[in-house]
Image (cartoon, rainbow, N blue to C red):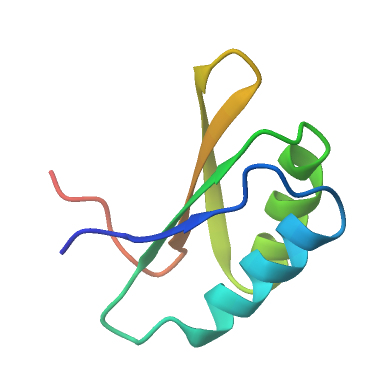
Length: 81
């Protein structure tokens, strides 16, 4: 299943984190991953902190100049081998 996507480019704190937390809380049980795209560097600290509190781990990938993809995955989901 493809991850749910949230694009928060152009938004500044606290909005990227607030929208991400809202999206994480709305994820269905069969949706283990949320992909967040941001161009706001402070979100690289605020989003993972809040995601961890909700039971998600964060993988961050730089996708361009000042643009990142955060993959937030439920902790109980096992990686496919």
